[in-house]
Length: 97
View 1 (cartoon, rainbow, N blue to C red):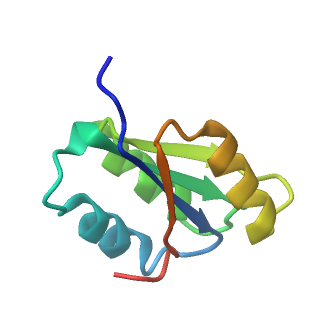
View 2 (view 1 turned 30 degrees about the horizontal axis):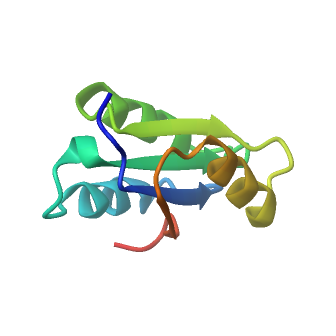
């Protein structure tokens, strides 16, 4: 198994308008996709946010989507950090691109 250099944790809730562009931006790095992971932690979105992430997962195995039943960002970060395999943890927001 290849070493993961970084885990990018992206807490989201109802980011349907932005999450696609955010993920596209995060996936266009100079690093090979298999050297970093993107962990999207969804806080029970009521829009299509989670479905959009799952669609991206089909083409990019380095994208992971986890649930955040508490629906607050600090809990999402803790979930992402606990599940991250990278040596470095990076935070990105779902509406950034």
